[in-house]
Image 1: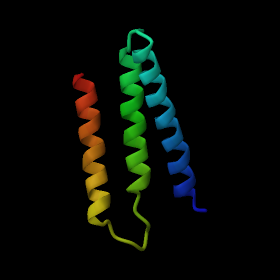
Image 2 (image 1 turned 45 degrees about the horizontal axis):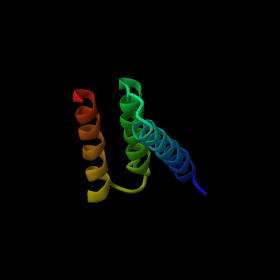
Image 3 (image 1 turned 90 degrees about the vertical axis):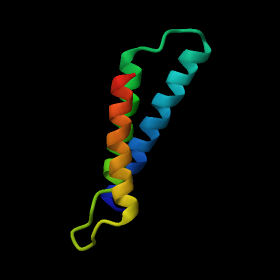
Image 4 (image 1 turned 180 degrees about the vertical axis):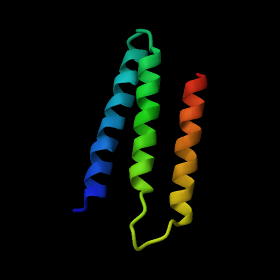
Length: 81
């Protein structure tokens, strides 16, 4: 397994954990703070960045460009919330 896949798996699991924790806090009636929202947006950005990382011999495809644009927009969106 490549380093990219291992990094994507680790960051993906961390993202799912952060989303699950935030959902649990919302369901239990606790306040969801700024830290939870920023953590989720940063983890999403890291995940898409790892997934869109370009190999030296390969060029970026349309999916990778879409992932980069989505990561940037998600960070902007969560910063304004």
